[in-house]
Length: 539
Image (cartoon, rainbow, N blue to C red; front, side, top):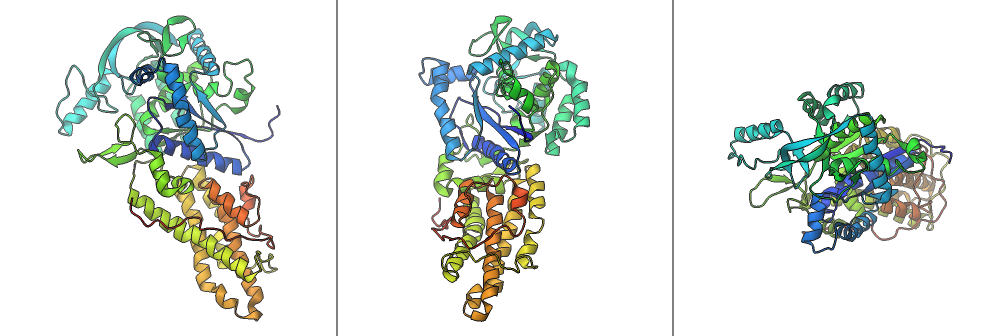
């Protein structure tokens, strides 16, 4: 197959199946979806991957706890929870990978064999600390530094027999078992050199500083297998061992492209990925272990890892602000927010009101505030008023494009350079900045209505041409805004285009679509029901 467009490969983490998806997993997935939609609108050949991480001790335990005959049966039962939510949220993923699929297992085994052949793994005995809930190993140094930090903060000392996890503050276990090790220590300087040569690899910048500091602190070889349970991908050269869950999981970014299959043409075309979107809790896996594994296998590294913060909630018992997660039991179900906001407003709120590199507190009150201010009062109101006036004053149609459409006006000026400003934000996943750029032209249009008072112009037959220009200018802003809002609110944007008698499908040349003058006019328009009815009742 000949590829005529540049590839854009974007991924989410694959999500653990020990519980249903929550607001945090949906947040990460929508982030990737918005970028994927933007890149498609810019004419790129997008591959957007998400999926499920189905191996590991926690999954086997969840299956047993929930009364399933096997871990596979449990994983199969969880698949609809993820697929159905992504469909509800209008996620446009092109692939959905499961780590129990034969294509993935084949790729993992090939990768492990490559590591062995290239001399980067060896068998030894592991004796160290292990966090069972996060399935993460920690060195003595990491555990000691965490305990010192806790003491400095005035917290009670942990039980020396079960020190607390540096990531989640739950008790660690001492693990002693035979294991295969990856020579992570060999990549300390290569990683530092790579970060320096590729300053945009880790974004935002604060996360890069965190990773560099960690690597400079010294890297130790990494246990990458378990032999005390069998729910995982067997090593092709040692079937007593299964791949450590994180090594298994990371390789999904390759196996989804056909790595390890008889046909690796898609892998050759699309790898390396343009961006992995991940949460800050898995930054070391994606910014230290994953690039080291790729270096060891002789494969190119992804162009960028974008690290988002946590959605946070306040613990009513302790008063502390905590990360929202399934394992902490404080997760808000996406269905609760969907009931309040609807799908497109849900997407808009989390993408526009959160600075994506930082932690973000979630508030029902703030959701309502953003919905009413940005969507009901601004965007929805502009569409409703303009289409109503267009239908009323021009016999149910949009006015024809006036001869004076290219003359300077407040709205033409507001839209000048909008694509460049918007695209600059979207390229760095500054979605709140991008949404603000669109809201600015929407607000300018609402002010323009008040300034130009088309209802007054409609009373004077001599001002018919001026009225036509005013309404056409407003419809042109709506057309442009609908294209720019499409990655955030695809269903609403399609509906707005339909009401304008335009193709409901999004553009594949966003830059051209944002040029002033694209609306020919003359076609029927439909006011329709309000796009965003105001929220009144308290949650």
